Image 1 (cartoon, rainbow, N blue to C red):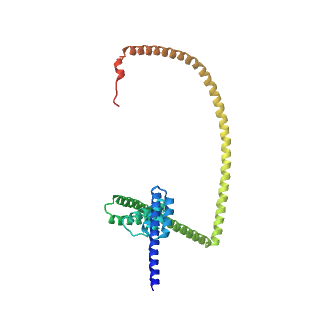
Image 2 (tube, helix red, strand yellow):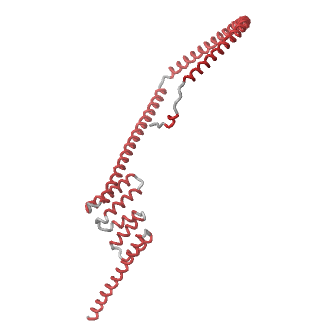
Image 3 (cartoon, rainbow, N blue to C red):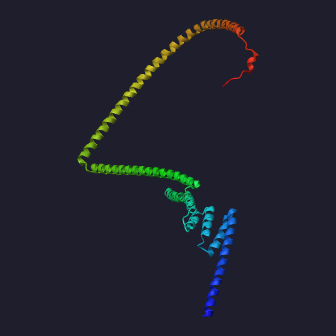
Length: 302
């Protein structure tokens, strides 16, 4: 009995000593990883945090630091998974809000963005309730709230545009169906026409075509006759024009001499006018007033 009790006591002491060693080892790893994190060596810090977490997966400090490291590495989905393992206190909730916001930034679909931003707002709101004096948290809430309003307005516009497109497509579809129905009805109507009536219509059309051709032939003959008459008249008119041209040339020869004399008189008058204009200009120059040199330094208020 004494041996059993001694064995149990030894086992408890050994477990306690091993536990203390393990905790001391984890603490050292956390300190090392924190130094790397503060030096912005996030990938190296991540490896140390992960190795320590294998020893104690429920350590809140390790889970929190690991989540922050993933956030710095822009691996927001991984960061979210570790934040969600922690109790939602005033140190965790703001980080959750920021993580959801970053996830929303990476989303391409408008609906996914809106959902992530809404989750970010919920966490910011919860953080404000826990820490009402946190100005940075309030700013983040207002900022994301404005983004969310803009996205919802954009979503509403897209819905309206889609509804308008659907209506236009429906109208075009109805028109197309209506046109097809009208074509079918016309086709049926043509098939139902009386064969005798169609024959009479063809004969009537042939008569009209023959009459039209005969009329065109008569018009062509009349036009040829008129062209012959016009040629004879043109010959007479050309002969008369040549005679009148000869008479006109004779008159122009006589008037050319008169024009030459008139031109000489006109040139003489122009020379006299130019001389008078020059005298007038000289008189104006003599009457002009000059400015004083003091005005050269005048300043103008533009």
